[in-house]
Image (cartoon, rainbow, N blue to C red; front, top):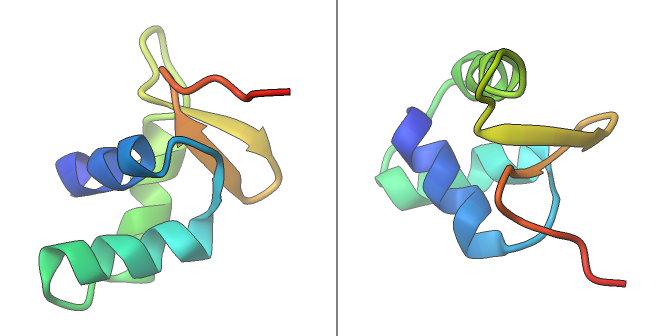
Length: 70
């Protein structure tokens, strides 16, 4: 799950809504993924000493290495 969600966000290169991440991860994996599993992965890896994701707004996440252009 972590690898799939990470790949989705890295490919996007910009923040995505959690529901969009769920849909893209399900498509990438070729099978339906549980919403709670995707949501839990995002929440778990947006915290801690070395987070993989960054919560940029309510319900929006991006890969920690992605920078917003502007």
